[in-house]
Image 1 (spheres, rainbow, N blue to C red):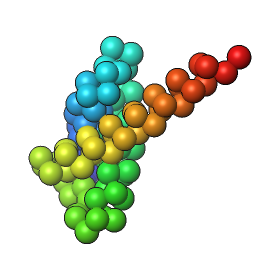
Image 2 (image 1 turned 90 degrees about the horizontal axis):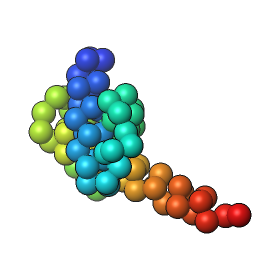
Image 3 (image 1 turned 60 degrees about the horizontal axis):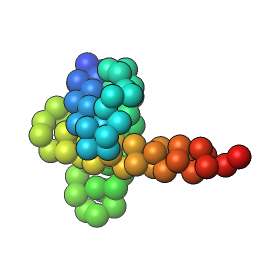
Image 4 (image 1 turned 180 degrees about the vertical axis):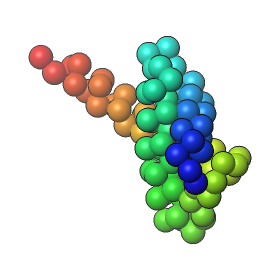
Length: 88
C-alpha cells in the first residue's frame, strides 16, 4: 500500500472508530488519520493472532481491521485519561 492509501484508510478508520468511541468531537482530521494508521497496525496484529489476514490494501476488509484496531486504541486511551483525572 502506498502512503496515500494509508492516509485514506487511516482517516476513514479513525473517524469511524471515534464515532463508536464517542471521541469524534474532540478529534480532528489529523488525529483521525494517526489513530487509524496505528489502529491498522494494532488490528492487523490482533487479526493475525487469530489466523485471519491483516491489512491488505484499500478495501472493506482492511477498513474493518483498521477500525477495530483504532477502536481498541481509543478505548485504551480513554481508560488512561479517566484514571489520570481521578488522581489528585
